[in-house]
Length: 306
Picture 1 (cartoon, rainbow, N blue to C red):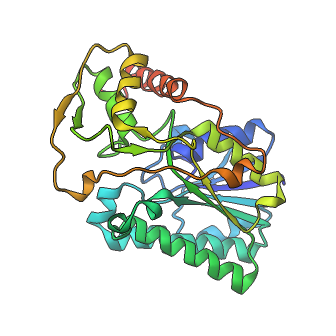
Picture 2 (cartoon, rainbow, N blue to C red):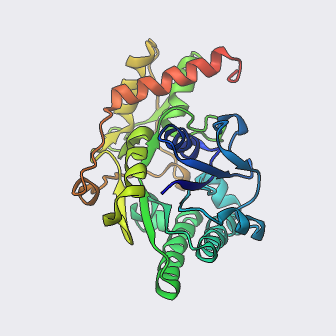
């Protein structure tokens, strides 16, 4: 496979994946409406199109494409709750439109992003982000059954690393803490954050599996959970960030509010299916967080973070 199309290419995962694909010699086409992504994150070698995944104008861009990575989505949980209609429009209608474009163009396989939010309990499943991701799964099954479209469902757990969107409100937890420490601010932790844990995976490890998907037909029409296979508490994340950033600051400890935006959970990815194909995460938490902090520190020095 030589020609690859990425939706959401200007975002965190998409831009990192584009770098890897270009370095590996692939021809890359990128789609992004730049609502969340940044044009400067897209490699110069990419054929970039500023266009919305919900538009039928994307269809010609899929002609001659061998494989698609569909990563574009509205994914800030508070934003998704505030605007359910837009969330479903982008995440469900947008996914159907991407699948339709791939079907019409005869694309050999479509890799698309699922989310661990669908595994975080009944309360999380009532949220509109999770609802939209469940809809994606049903759209996937429909396109496989009706048209024989080859898909690979990639259920991401908590991905982190350079280019994770620090402009988002609120930013993802690792980026939020790192930014506060770099600015000399004390992050706020909750009393039970030693029991509030997630499976965090570094973006490079995720992209290792993405590249494997292009060459390994054993992945076709399957779902893979992608995480580190370890659950790390928010308290442990803060301690590690404090170490790699060299900050002397201690957190402010508060009681957790009765608010679904701050729901406590424990996630742990069963990565055995991907491991059975020879993949395994290689980046430990300290090394990954050091790369994240170095990226954010560099952004701060450039004046992008104030």
